[in-house]
Length: 231
Ligand code: DX5
Ligand code: ZN
Image (cartoon, rainbow, N blue to C red; front, side):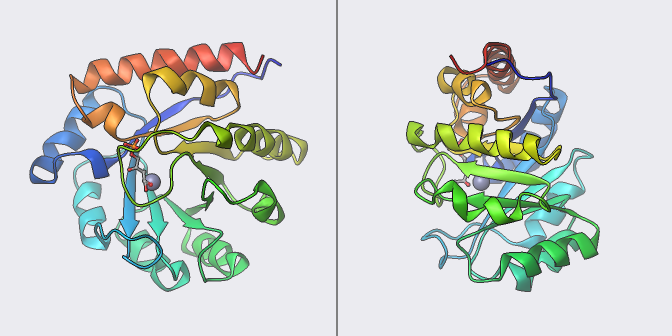
């Protein structure tokens, strides 16, 4: 199945960067051709880990002009979307499994003038996000159980990428389908072939080796996947 050409974007996930040299990591990835940055916000409730809040998002905002994709792994996104939009988030991604009513989060993020994404955990069926496909700007399929970077990709999520792309296309929506968690040079090709257009890459960008070379190899992989489609 071949797909129409669509812009493929790589978003390095700063959770995998050296927090002691975060500014340098941001500048290096931007200079190496990153398309956006992904920032993982964790509250210790929705996921077991705690990461950072709006202050760090604002610090990254001051360092780059690239879009910031803020992934809210928090129980009550409705309460915090304004703080993260003010901090400089361009897209605010919340989980369908969180406590806030999804319709209210979507409405509030759009009222704030930001883009909104809806994420689903690896074991959440695609049907959970289906009611929101007409209004969200991004559907984020998780390739790992949220909470930590550097985990192994769960291939059973791949069909959800295709489902998301096909349902969005059927609705005439140009929203991004993103994949987050466990993306490597080896499997990025499959995620693109299945319909992902926005690729969150933590360890595969910051986990070792030159950032520019890592991004170059990831880009070649997703471009190959998008050309190939699902066979
Ligand atoms: C996981 C986070 C991911 C993570 C990605 O909870 O949402 O964004 O930082 O890191 P890698 O690519 O190393 O799995
Ligand atoms: Zn994330």
